[in-house]
Image (tube, rainbow, N blue to C red):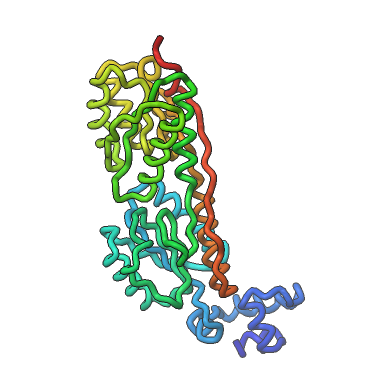
Length: 327
Protein backbone atom coordinates (compact mmCIF):
# COMPACT_ATOMS: atom_id res chain seq x y z
CA UNK A 1 0.00 0.00 0.00
CA UNK A 2 2.92 2.33 0.75
CA UNK A 3 4.37 1.60 -2.70
CA UNK A 4 1.04 2.47 -4.33
CA UNK A 5 0.82 5.71 -2.32
CA UNK A 6 4.32 6.76 -3.49
CA UNK A 7 3.58 5.84 -7.11
CA UNK A 8 0.29 7.81 -7.11
CA UNK A 9 1.68 10.63 -4.93
CA UNK A 10 -1.13 10.31 -2.39
CA UNK A 11 -1.42 9.33 1.25
CA UNK A 12 -1.77 5.78 2.47
CA UNK A 13 -5.22 6.72 3.78
CA UNK A 14 -6.33 7.65 0.26
CA UNK A 15 -5.11 4.28 -1.06
CA UNK A 16 -7.08 2.61 1.74
CA UNK A 17 -10.23 4.50 0.81
CA UNK A 18 -9.92 3.48 -2.84
CA UNK A 19 -9.16 -0.17 -2.08
CA UNK A 20 -12.18 -0.35 0.26
CA UNK A 21 -14.53 1.18 -2.32
CA UNK A 22 -15.21 4.40 -0.41
CA UNK A 23 -16.80 7.21 -2.39
CA UNK A 24 -15.12 10.17 -0.64
CA UNK A 25 -12.22 10.29 -3.12
CA UNK A 26 -11.83 12.72 -6.01
CA UNK A 27 -12.44 10.84 -9.32
CA UNK A 28 -9.09 11.90 -10.82
CA UNK A 29 -7.28 10.85 -7.67
CA UNK A 30 -9.13 7.53 -7.63
CA UNK A 31 -8.10 6.82 -11.22
CA UNK A 32 -4.48 7.70 -10.43
CA UNK A 33 -4.50 5.29 -7.48
CA UNK A 34 -6.13 2.53 -9.55
CA UNK A 35 -3.54 3.00 -12.29
CA UNK A 36 -0.76 2.71 -9.69
CA UNK A 37 -2.37 -0.49 -8.36
CA UNK A 38 -2.47 -1.96 -11.87
CA UNK A 39 1.10 -0.95 -12.60
CA UNK A 40 2.47 -2.42 -9.38
CA UNK A 41 0.20 -5.48 -9.36
CA UNK A 42 -1.31 -4.51 -6.02
CA UNK A 43 -4.31 -6.42 -4.67
CA UNK A 44 -5.95 -5.69 -1.30
CA UNK A 45 -5.35 -8.38 1.30
CA UNK A 46 -8.83 -9.58 2.27
CA UNK A 47 -7.57 -11.45 5.35
CA UNK A 48 -5.85 -8.35 6.69
CA UNK A 49 -8.93 -6.27 5.93
CA UNK A 50 -11.09 -8.76 7.87
CA UNK A 51 -8.80 -8.50 10.88
CA UNK A 52 -9.19 -4.73 10.86
CA UNK A 53 -12.93 -4.56 10.19
CA UNK A 54 -14.17 -7.77 11.78
CA UNK A 55 -15.94 -8.61 8.49
CA UNK A 56 -15.03 -11.44 6.12
CA UNK A 57 -17.45 -10.49 3.33
CA UNK A 58 -18.46 -14.13 3.08
CA UNK A 59 -21.88 -15.77 3.52
CA UNK A 60 -22.33 -19.42 4.47
CA UNK A 61 -25.16 -21.32 2.78
CA UNK A 62 -26.41 -24.66 4.12
CA UNK A 63 -28.76 -26.55 1.81
CA UNK A 64 -30.32 -30.00 1.95
CA UNK A 65 -30.32 -30.87 -1.74
CA UNK A 66 -28.88 -29.45 -4.95
CA UNK A 67 -31.21 -31.50 -7.15
CA UNK A 68 -34.38 -29.60 -6.27
CA UNK A 69 -35.50 -27.06 -8.89
CA UNK A 70 -36.52 -24.54 -6.23
CA UNK A 71 -33.34 -24.89 -4.18
CA UNK A 72 -31.12 -24.42 -7.23
CA UNK A 73 -33.02 -21.33 -8.39
CA UNK A 74 -32.90 -19.86 -4.88
CA UNK A 75 -29.19 -20.65 -4.51
CA UNK A 76 -28.48 -19.02 -7.87
CA UNK A 77 -30.27 -15.85 -6.75
CA UNK A 78 -28.38 -15.85 -3.43
CA UNK A 79 -25.04 -16.11 -5.23
CA UNK A 80 -25.91 -13.19 -7.54
CA UNK A 81 -27.23 -10.98 -4.73
CA UNK A 82 -24.18 -11.76 -2.56
CA UNK A 83 -21.79 -10.94 -5.40
CA UNK A 84 -23.61 -7.66 -6.06
CA UNK A 85 -23.08 -6.76 -2.40
CA UNK A 86 -19.39 -7.66 -2.54
CA UNK A 87 -19.74 -10.99 -0.70
CA UNK A 88 -18.66 -14.50 -1.63
CA UNK A 89 -20.55 -17.63 -0.56
CA UNK A 90 -19.37 -20.83 1.09
CA UNK A 91 -21.74 -23.70 0.28
CA UNK A 92 -22.22 -26.64 2.64
CA UNK A 93 -24.63 -29.30 1.29
CA UNK A 94 -26.08 -31.70 3.87
CA UNK A 95 -27.06 -35.23 2.80
CA UNK A 96 -30.08 -35.50 5.12
CA UNK A 97 -32.29 -32.72 6.60
CA UNK A 98 -31.79 -33.69 10.24
CA UNK A 99 -30.89 -31.74 13.36
CA UNK A 100 -27.54 -33.52 13.56
CA UNK A 101 -26.59 -32.75 9.95
CA UNK A 102 -27.45 -29.06 10.37
CA UNK A 103 -25.37 -28.86 13.56
CA UNK A 104 -22.39 -30.52 11.82
CA UNK A 105 -22.70 -28.09 8.91
CA UNK A 106 -22.60 -25.16 11.34
CA UNK A 107 -19.52 -26.66 12.93
CA UNK A 108 -17.82 -26.68 9.54
CA UNK A 109 -18.85 -23.09 8.82
CA UNK A 110 -17.45 -21.94 12.16
CA UNK A 111 -14.03 -22.83 10.73
CA UNK A 112 -14.64 -20.96 7.47
CA UNK A 113 -14.83 -17.32 8.66
CA UNK A 114 -18.30 -16.26 7.46
CA UNK A 115 -20.30 -13.20 8.50
CA UNK A 116 -23.66 -15.00 8.55
CA UNK A 117 -25.52 -18.06 7.31
CA UNK A 118 -28.55 -18.73 5.10
CA UNK A 119 -30.20 -22.14 5.57
CA UNK A 120 -32.29 -23.67 2.77
CA UNK A 121 -33.47 -26.88 4.35
CA UNK A 122 -37.09 -27.63 3.31
CA UNK A 123 -37.95 -29.48 6.51
CA UNK A 124 -39.71 -29.10 9.87
CA UNK A 125 -36.70 -29.01 12.13
CA UNK A 126 -35.42 -25.52 12.83
CA UNK A 127 -38.32 -24.83 15.17
CA UNK A 128 -37.07 -27.60 17.45
CA UNK A 129 -34.85 -26.80 20.41
CA UNK A 130 -32.19 -29.45 19.81
CA UNK A 131 -30.70 -27.79 16.70
CA UNK A 132 -27.46 -26.24 17.94
CA UNK A 133 -26.89 -22.95 16.13
CA UNK A 134 -24.27 -20.39 17.23
CA UNK A 135 -25.89 -17.59 19.19
CA UNK A 136 -23.53 -14.90 17.88
CA UNK A 137 -23.87 -15.58 14.14
CA UNK A 138 -26.65 -13.95 12.05
CA UNK A 139 -28.91 -16.60 10.48
CA UNK A 140 -31.75 -16.40 7.93
CA UNK A 141 -33.99 -19.39 7.21
CA UNK A 142 -35.47 -20.18 3.78
CA UNK A 143 -38.29 -22.70 3.32
CA UNK A 144 -38.61 -23.85 6.93
CA UNK A 145 -39.74 -22.61 10.32
CA UNK A 146 -37.65 -21.19 13.13
CA UNK A 147 -40.18 -19.90 15.64
CA UNK A 148 -39.21 -16.33 16.52
CA UNK A 149 -35.48 -17.05 16.75
CA UNK A 150 -34.49 -16.15 13.18
CA UNK A 151 -35.91 -14.25 10.22
CA UNK A 152 -37.65 -16.50 7.68
CA UNK A 153 -37.94 -15.73 3.95
CA UNK A 154 -40.34 -17.96 2.06
CA UNK A 155 -42.86 -18.18 -0.75
CA UNK A 156 -46.50 -17.81 0.33
CA UNK A 157 -47.09 -21.53 -0.09
CA UNK A 158 -50.60 -21.52 1.37
CA UNK A 159 -51.85 -18.74 -0.90
CA UNK A 160 -50.44 -20.49 -3.97
CA UNK A 161 -52.17 -23.76 -3.11
CA UNK A 162 -55.42 -21.88 -2.50
CA UNK A 163 -55.15 -20.24 -5.93
CA UNK A 164 -54.64 -23.62 -7.60
CA UNK A 165 -57.52 -25.30 -5.79
CA UNK A 166 -59.97 -22.43 -6.24
CA UNK A 167 -59.12 -22.21 -9.93
CA UNK A 168 -60.21 -25.82 -10.44
CA UNK A 169 -63.33 -25.44 -8.29
CA UNK A 170 -64.29 -22.25 -10.13
CA UNK A 171 -64.09 -24.18 -13.41
CA UNK A 172 -66.89 -26.38 -12.06
CA UNK A 173 -65.05 -29.45 -10.72
CA UNK A 174 -66.83 -31.00 -7.74
CA UNK A 175 -63.55 -31.62 -5.92
CA UNK A 176 -59.80 -31.58 -6.47
CA UNK A 177 -57.44 -34.49 -5.87
CA UNK A 178 -53.93 -33.79 -4.60
CA UNK A 179 -50.50 -35.32 -5.17
CA UNK A 180 -48.51 -33.95 -2.23
CA UNK A 181 -44.78 -33.63 -1.67
CA UNK A 182 -42.89 -35.56 1.04
CA UNK A 183 -44.35 -35.43 4.52
CA UNK A 184 -41.12 -34.04 6.00
CA UNK A 185 -41.25 -31.06 3.63
CA UNK A 186 -42.31 -27.74 5.10
CA UNK A 187 -43.54 -26.49 1.71
CA UNK A 188 -45.47 -29.67 0.95
CA UNK A 189 -47.23 -29.51 4.30
CA UNK A 190 -48.35 -25.91 3.78
CA UNK A 191 -49.61 -26.67 0.27
CA UNK A 192 -51.50 -29.77 1.44
CA UNK A 193 -53.08 -27.98 4.40
CA UNK A 194 -54.19 -25.04 2.22
CA UNK A 195 -55.63 -27.42 -0.40
CA UNK A 196 -57.67 -29.22 2.25
CA UNK A 197 -58.83 -26.01 3.94
CA UNK A 198 -59.92 -24.54 0.60
CA UNK A 199 -61.98 -27.62 -0.25
CA UNK A 200 -63.70 -27.53 3.13
CA UNK A 201 -64.45 -23.81 2.85
CA UNK A 202 -66.15 -24.46 -0.49
CA UNK A 203 -68.14 -27.43 0.85
CA UNK A 204 -66.28 -29.89 -1.40
CA UNK A 205 -65.33 -33.43 -0.47
CA UNK A 206 -61.69 -33.94 0.59
CA UNK A 207 -60.24 -36.96 -1.27
CA UNK A 208 -57.42 -39.07 0.18
CA UNK A 209 -53.97 -37.49 -0.28
CA UNK A 210 -51.41 -39.26 -2.45
CA UNK A 211 -47.82 -38.56 -1.37
CA UNK A 212 -44.94 -38.32 -3.85
CA UNK A 213 -41.27 -37.41 -3.53
CA UNK A 214 -41.15 -34.38 -5.88
CA UNK A 215 -39.94 -36.51 -8.81
CA UNK A 216 -41.69 -37.02 -12.14
CA UNK A 217 -41.42 -40.77 -11.52
CA UNK A 218 -43.56 -40.52 -8.38
CA UNK A 219 -46.04 -38.32 -10.24
CA UNK A 220 -46.29 -40.97 -12.97
CA UNK A 221 -46.79 -43.82 -10.51
CA UNK A 222 -49.49 -41.99 -8.54
CA UNK A 223 -51.03 -40.68 -11.76
CA UNK A 224 -51.61 -44.22 -13.01
CA UNK A 225 -53.52 -44.89 -9.79
CA UNK A 226 -55.64 -41.75 -10.18
CA UNK A 227 -56.27 -42.41 -13.88
CA UNK A 228 -58.12 -45.63 -13.00
CA UNK A 229 -60.70 -43.67 -11.02
CA UNK A 230 -63.39 -42.24 -13.33
CA UNK A 231 -64.48 -39.80 -10.61
CA UNK A 232 -61.15 -37.95 -10.83
CA UNK A 233 -61.60 -34.83 -13.01
CA UNK A 234 -59.16 -32.37 -11.39
CA UNK A 235 -55.72 -32.89 -9.84
CA UNK A 236 -53.42 -30.41 -8.10
CA UNK A 237 -49.80 -31.63 -8.05
CA UNK A 238 -47.53 -30.03 -5.45
CA UNK A 239 -44.78 -29.33 -7.99
CA UNK A 240 -44.34 -29.22 -11.76
CA UNK A 241 -42.09 -32.26 -11.94
CA UNK A 242 -44.74 -34.51 -10.39
CA UNK A 243 -47.29 -32.85 -12.68
CA UNK A 244 -45.14 -33.88 -15.66
CA UNK A 245 -45.22 -37.53 -14.59
CA UNK A 246 -48.95 -37.20 -13.93
CA UNK A 247 -49.58 -35.91 -17.47
CA UNK A 248 -47.70 -38.88 -18.90
CA UNK A 249 -49.77 -41.30 -16.81
CA UNK A 250 -53.04 -39.73 -17.92
CA UNK A 251 -51.99 -39.85 -21.58
CA UNK A 252 -50.94 -43.50 -21.28
CA UNK A 253 -54.27 -44.33 -19.64
CA UNK A 254 -56.33 -42.66 -22.35
CA UNK A 255 -57.56 -39.84 -20.08
CA UNK A 256 -57.52 -36.65 -22.17
CA UNK A 257 -56.10 -33.48 -20.58
CA UNK A 258 -57.96 -31.19 -20.04
CA UNK A 259 -61.10 -32.61 -21.73
CA UNK A 260 -61.47 -35.35 -19.09
CA UNK A 261 -58.97 -34.40 -16.36
CA UNK A 262 -57.56 -30.98 -15.49
CA UNK A 263 -54.06 -30.68 -14.02
CA UNK A 264 -52.43 -27.83 -12.10
CA UNK A 265 -48.82 -27.80 -10.88
CA UNK A 266 -46.71 -25.61 -8.62
CA UNK A 267 -43.39 -23.77 -9.32
CA UNK A 268 -43.72 -22.58 -12.94
CA UNK A 269 -40.40 -24.09 -13.95
CA UNK A 270 -39.33 -22.87 -17.38
CA UNK A 271 -40.13 -26.19 -19.04
CA UNK A 272 -43.75 -26.20 -17.82
CA UNK A 273 -44.90 -24.10 -20.76
CA UNK A 274 -43.50 -26.83 -23.06
CA UNK A 275 -45.39 -29.71 -21.39
CA UNK A 276 -48.22 -31.18 -23.44
CA UNK A 277 -50.55 -29.56 -22.90
CA UNK A 278 -48.77 -26.46 -21.51
CA UNK A 279 -49.17 -26.62 -17.74
CA UNK A 280 -51.39 -24.40 -15.62
CA UNK A 281 -49.31 -23.81 -12.51
CA UNK A 282 -48.50 -21.56 -9.56
CA UNK A 283 -45.50 -19.31 -10.11
CA UNK A 284 -42.92 -19.00 -7.36
CA UNK A 285 -40.46 -16.11 -7.47
CA UNK A 286 -37.29 -17.91 -6.38
CA UNK A 287 -35.11 -14.99 -7.40
CA UNK A 288 -37.00 -12.71 -5.04
CA UNK A 289 -36.69 -15.23 -2.20
CA UNK A 290 -32.92 -15.46 -2.72
CA UNK A 291 -32.47 -11.69 -2.97
CA UNK A 292 -34.52 -10.96 0.13
CA UNK A 293 -32.73 -13.62 2.17
CA UNK A 294 -29.39 -11.95 1.39
CA UNK A 295 -30.85 -8.52 2.21
CA UNK A 296 -32.20 -9.77 5.56
CA UNK A 297 -28.87 -11.38 6.47
CA UNK A 298 -26.73 -8.39 5.53
CA UNK A 299 -29.11 -6.07 7.39
CA UNK A 300 -28.36 -7.98 10.59
CA UNK A 301 -24.64 -8.27 9.81
CA UNK A 302 -24.33 -4.51 9.29
CA UNK A 303 -26.83 -3.17 11.84
CA UNK A 304 -26.85 -5.83 14.52
CA UNK A 305 -30.66 -5.83 14.36
CA UNK A 306 -32.84 -8.69 13.16
CA UNK A 307 -35.07 -8.14 10.12
CA UNK A 308 -38.71 -9.19 9.97
CA UNK A 309 -39.74 -12.46 8.33
CA UNK A 310 -40.93 -12.13 4.73
CA UNK A 311 -43.51 -13.94 2.59
CA UNK A 312 -43.01 -13.60 -1.16
CA UNK A 313 -46.26 -13.62 -3.14
CA UNK A 314 -47.27 -16.34 -5.62
CA UNK A 315 -49.45 -16.07 -8.71
CA UNK A 316 -51.53 -18.45 -10.82
CA UNK A 317 -50.43 -18.93 -14.43
CA UNK A 318 -53.31 -20.35 -16.47
CA UNK A 319 -52.34 -22.38 -19.54
CA UNK A 320 -53.97 -25.28 -21.42
CA UNK A 321 -53.99 -28.13 -18.88
CA UNK A 322 -57.10 -26.93 -17.01
CA UNK A 323 -60.69 -26.57 -18.21
CA UNK A 324 -64.27 -27.19 -17.17
CA UNK A 325 -65.12 -30.81 -16.33
CA UNK A 326 -66.78 -33.04 -18.95
CA UNK A 327 -70.53 -32.52 -19.16
